Length: 237
View 1: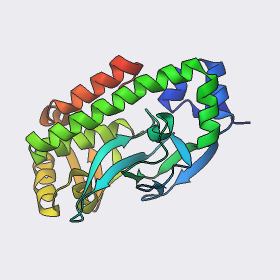
View 2 (view 1 turned 45 degrees about the vertical axis):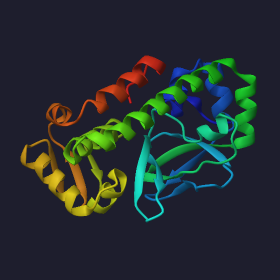
View 3 (view 1 turned 120 degrees about the horizontal axis):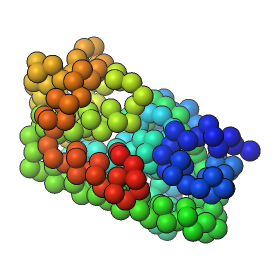
């Protein structure tokens, strides 16, 4: 039986009444995720749902010409596998570990059984679904109208929220993939943020130096997304 107390770093689990959290975690296994570990592939039946305890999972879609764009960032505030919760069998997007970490993994059939038997879990996940939809829709608008520098700051803030410290590994190629832009554009945006003293970026590693300044550099989308998580499930993103 899983130790529920050890899994409270996932904020969805922490938001559940203890007995309901036990129903969920008692069936889970702990998965160690290396960078780029695939959690699901496009148009393939989903076998598991994931509740990250650390690290970050990126949900992204790849266009016909090969360009990939991130559509959601999921960490210890949430769950990966909403298509299973919503009754679907597969997702058009793909998901992989953006930053290494640990996650609780639960088979899809066990998950469906838990949801059927628990009104509190269902209610919480419905509100969480709305929060994720807010993130996806706001990010789509952000990608259309805001500068790469603003989007870069927003993405760094969202990743920082999901980490325990101020440093995390990040290559320019990877950040470009998440933002849907070429490496030179990422390099320019990161250089602007570094010269302003908001971050330190060297050899594929980012350190957030001035969180308040980075928030000022980001577009309003960061605050909108964080506000929706707080409003709907009582958690900042």
